[in-house]
Image: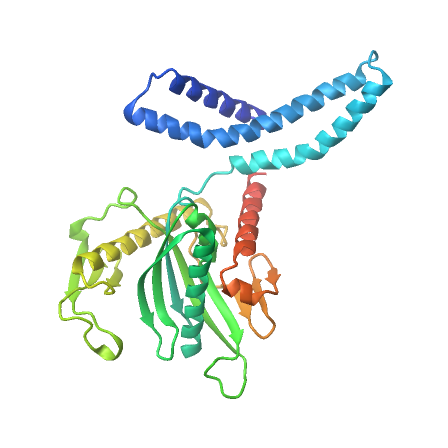
Length: 356
């Protein structure tokens, strides 16, 4: 099927759905299914129609220019209009191509954010804490809800690891590119001689899975309960409210102890487990579809640093797209829009290149 034929097919399908829904011939689950398909197709079809209308206008103007009966003044007006359309057409073509790219089914999902201190000792824990707060501010800037699920504090501040649930519109689509190793270069608070240290933290971003996405069998779980402990091992409360869940088929372990209620800790732990299992399935599919594309979005390969935060020079560099911004204070305060937009555009360009 040619590109133009594909566009015509989508426009016809949109009209069929419109007629079907308008006639009131469907109800219940069918109505919901067709309504969603119609709603999903509408912005795409609007983009297609803008492209097709521009193409038709261009053909009409060319025919006018070639008509001997057309006077000089009309030809001049047609030529000016043609010039404008010829500038618009490449942009409209690209807009249609982008709209036709396969959508990541997880893009509209909420996300589970996990930040862990990596190499670098106490300074890595301090940096992990800074990153966690950076994402908290970014979420606030986006109008998302940021709920801390668990935090393990570092010995001199910062965090060993922390997990948060982020809910809102298009959360995973914008956050998924943050997964990887983040490197920091700065003079640590613990450094007495002013030397610059390099340390790292890892970030994982998991699409939050619904129960319909991942079914977990009770027989596949081992659930242990124990007494929550705080710094130094002292008991946080006197009941066995902390929960550790082991997923036997995969060996995944999730532990939750922040809530005083065993039931709430279990629910949170299952939510994290479900999201990790969902991400594992996504990784399998991504690797199967494009094993040769090592930097594929969502592959989960976090072995290489993706971004460096250089405090003495005030710069942040994303190594995947060679983008450097000299506004480290703003970035650490949650201004990640420039990186998010550039990474999305880069991913779209790669997908278009593969289709071409």
